[in-house]
Amino acid sequence: MLECLVDGEISDRISAADRGLQYGDGLFETMAVFSGQPRFWQGHIDRLNAGCKQLGLPVTPQSVLLREVRTVSASQSKCVVKIMLTRGTSGRGYAPRASSEANRIVCSYAWPADPGNLVKTGIRTRICDLRLAAQPALAGLKHLNRLEQVLARSEWKDHSIHEGILLDQEDHLISAISSNVFLVHSGRLMTPRLDRCGVRGVMRSAILNAFRERCEQRRIMLDMLPEADEIFVCNSVRGVFPVTRIDHWEYDIGNVTREVQDWLSNR
Image 1 (tube, rainbow, N blue to C red):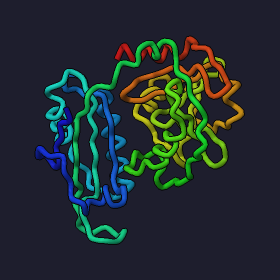
Image 2 (image 1 turned 30 degrees about the horizontal axis):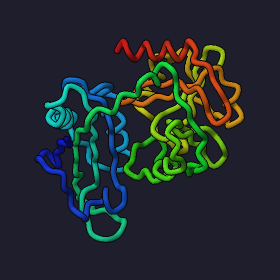
Image 3 (image 1 turned 180 degrees about the horizontal axis):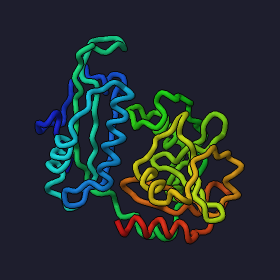
Image 4 (image 1 turned 180 degrees about the vertical axis):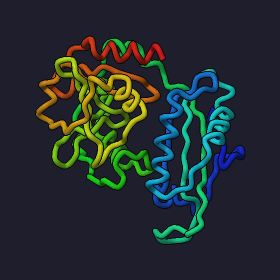
């Protein structure tokens, strides 16, 4: 059952004039919570605060958010919690009020269905037709406008395909629809630079930090995909999944992917 707080009060309603609803003017974080403890909490807070600075939103104290995350997750041993911050309400027009206050929404959701053996056996993916637009001012942020991802996910109904791979207008690899992507080549990990578009995932950042001596952020062209030894996707809720197929390209599940999975399980 959905449990939700709006500005600290039990509610699942916001004003029709809220700028998050009107314009997608806001940010969100989605995190795994175990017995009231959010995984990678500081990473989520750091990204949220950086997004607030970029968009000019007031920063909500970390202690307030942590208390509300624990409140909405109190009845569940493990769940998913989503924090949304919007610029609040205003009249018509894009210009925000000079003194607008952020609205915050904190909701818990049931833990996702068990993926079965996919963590071990890997997932099948496809290249999406949709190409992400470049916008450096929003690159990396987890802002509320996710229409590109919505359109990309609507491209297929085949249940054997578990993720979609997103490219930009120049056919650079950016990410998957709801996860980040790592390629492994000769034991080294490569992940796309996200300075033009895409979301800098919290799990991605944790992997980059944990394996910093073997990681590289770079431009990855489409024609580099068949040359990879291993590929995996990562997400702060679902974890790390090996990729065994992208369209007609097939991949083995290698030692580096298993090493990253073991690192996560030990956390």
